[in-house]
Length: 116
Image (cartoon, rainbow, N blue to C red; front, side, top):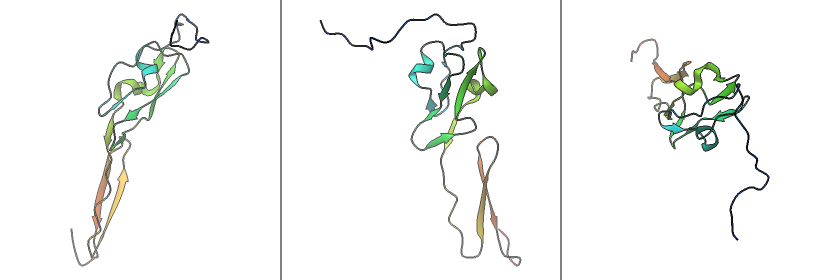
């Protein structure tokens, strides 16, 4: 007979320290299947996988620690669109910084005798 599967795989009961499966779908991304279908073992890190053209906004993963996810990453994880700063104008330059929420903000700096 033909069968599929890993013969070394075993069954186990969840422990009191395991986390629930990651069922909330992050904006523009997803959790790996091993973290979304069954309880997640204590100490496991589940990477946030973003759709093409998107990057994690703040947390890149959800880590199960003693029956909850650190920083509530399971509830607030999201992916934001990846973008490049605008091209610099002939007289001036864009300066971009990413804030703690993962949002990139750009400001235009101009010579002293000019303004944006």
